[in-house]
Image 1 (cartoon, helix red, strand yellow):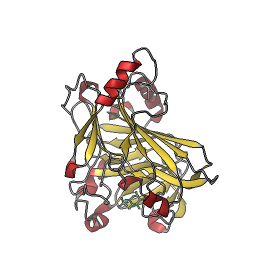
Image 2 (spheres, helix red, strand yellow):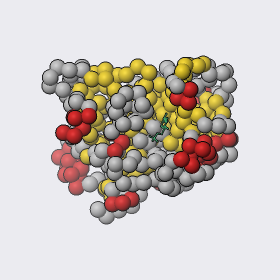
Image 3 (cartoon, protein in one colour):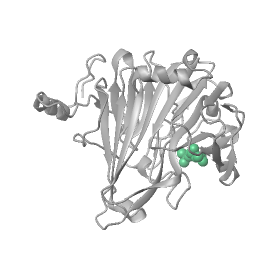
Length: 342
Ligand SMILES: O=P(O)(O)OC[C@H]1O[C@H](O)[C@H](O)[C@@H](O)[C@@H]1O
């Protein structure tokens, strides 16, 4: 498909046809995206916003692998050693952990959604959206016969990835139990977000102080965090429980703050492998731990249970703002976020 100019993106043919018939109908919005070949020939969706904002989503894993601001700076971390070859999950961006987070169950680590091929859903059920959002894509995953052998539940997992007018990125997951045998199912979940940071030792996370957490490095034992913002000087792998809906990641060197807003996801995982684990990972550069931090909105401690016909929604919204807006104070930030309408 020909690349449209950034200021006037073209809808794909199916969406263009739909647009023609929708002129008199208020719903749904026409999604604007472009489908191109990415690494190893895997297909990816390009989202282009105003002023050069952009994002990319691989159909493999429905994984966001790029989110750029209006200076074309990459805001997410993807390893230079990432392997774009199924069944390996892509190291970086925003992998989706479903139906299991980590080792909290009998499935492979982080479940299978991140290493399945998703498809574009051109006709998703309506989802209320900010009318200013012009660039988004809907993806869907249904279990294959093979998946049903390892996790015997029928489901529809719809993911909308949207790029807002101010460059904010949102991911909305809708998971529906489509079992026809009357059975409920339970799952754990995470948006395993890898942020790009200038230097991990200059980064501080606000919003998780005084929270209880399970420490994955200490057999998932429960502890309570101190009163100070989280800083990093060694490996960390913690699941913060009942974390607030807004968390700020402050990168002093870049003078940039990422604001993460979560809905439907009570927990937040914080992970950095540090030097030893970095070296042990085949798809991660030895020194790359210095330039990334995972803060992952999640539902880990209490699995989500859906009865047949029930749907769950879990949303993540990300924005990157100059640090002067919010360093040390999450409340004024709220006003700024309201202004951004996220
Ligand atoms: O290597 P992966 O399967 O992608 O997992 C990477 C990391 O993900 C999460 O943050 C977990 O809490 C960690 O224990 C795990 O090491």
